[in-house]
Length: 220
Image (cartoon, rainbow, N blue to C red; front, side):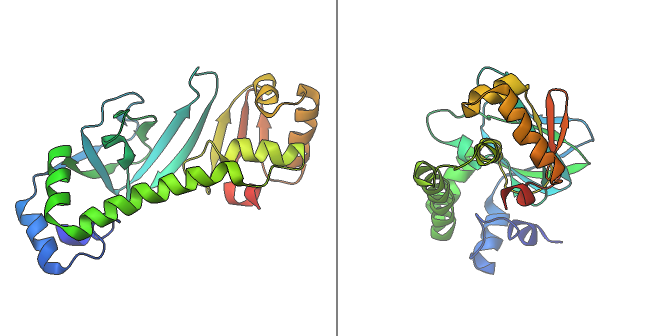
């Protein structure tokens, strides 16, 4: 596969003409890297000075609460980008840890090159703006969603809001008392609600850990 075919897998380059893509390929300083199984690609709080485009492979993503009391682990398949929003804004650092779950290959583009591409190509600039605008709009709508009517719904909302992607397997490392505090109910009632969800086949309970085989089923 040619480099410009790889680029078309990602939203920042979609809609660009072949001539423009040829210019991008010919003029842009790309980085190329591979990560073996178990290798950390970026860590939480690492400075973000370039965009990472995952071409092949699978990543394990770990996201943690501010006090590091609980975390969620999920999987990410190629093709995808690693936190493109982190390269701009107030906090230009990664907020998740990405580890190779299978052998991975990446293209990287420095921030300076991203700025140049944005100046030179209108479609690239619009794609970048649309990416950030979509993320912002989704976050701004969250407070206006219907408040959960039951404890089970509050638990599902708590879990789903801490995922990067609303599908696939998730592992939540959290003790029952902390989850009860987060959803504003007693530990006993939370335990009962979780056992009902487990009985329905929507999740599996372990000591200090909740496994969700398919997040999309739990959200239904």
